[in-house]
Length: 308
Image (cartoon, rainbow, N blue to C red; front, side, top):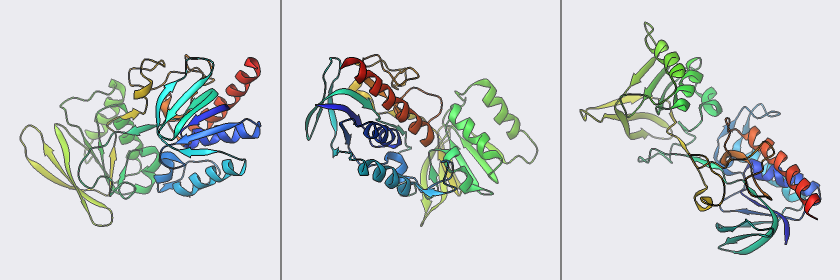
């Protein structure tokens, strides 16, 4: 019987583990892939305090090593079933079933992909799913943003002062973002000699390059005409998907599937917490995930003090 089981070894989970282990709690971490989560596959990070620039894999290693030096116990397995409503929580995995007094869900959220050839090849080599994370690598470069929601507009506005040229590609004739964001972008696009070009009713069909992304092929879905665009970067902002499918009907989720918590990371089930990108929130960054993990760990400690 563990005091806490943490599912997910990203920044939120590892931070929570560090806090919990320092509080002398008996914890188990379950991770299906590798420690660090999306951070581990991020080439360079320049917005994490204390590091002017750090490779994502290096930061992931530092977080994991700090936790393991405190005695972290981790198993690599898929969480298959959640029996978490009662006082004793049970997590069934493909490596056994584990029991705990509390559960912290750090399941993350994954950017939706274009699902075109070479997409994975160019991730970190021209393709990014986060303009605020990677925009600075494309100063005075030509970039494209794919998407029609608020994130794509925010990405375009963020990149405006950095990039030499910005294409905004959307598969429909109208954007689904809020009016204020759209007005800001269209105002920039209407300027004479504007570096913003909006391309509607179009989708990305092909990605080309040798060691890095060099061009994309787009297709007009109405006319079927194609066009090659020479770009250094492609920012994909077509939405994110939280990893919460097995929790539907158990936890309170928002319309997008993110876990609803209070400011202390409590879910609707006593003793069950959520932290990081899987949680309903306005900003998903490494630092906010770490903050969530720290808060969740303190909440777990308070819960355990009250139930014992």
